[in-house]
Image 1: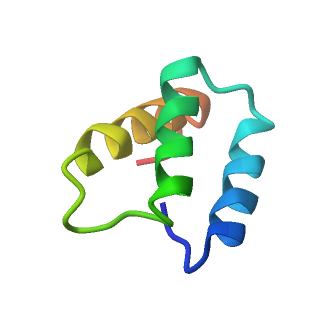
Image 2: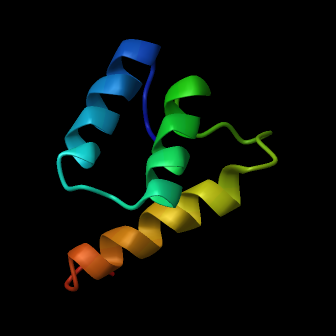
Length: 64
């Protein structure tokens, strides 16, 4: 969700995708690649951020 260029966003996405996220999370990750990270005016920001965050909390139970 944090990137300053499409290349950096894709590199971050590639890292997350190594952990085999479910399809809805893959879509959320790709959303942030296409928007070059989280944008405050993005109507889908909360939905996509929550999809990734909820998945990360399942994969990493110590994440708060």
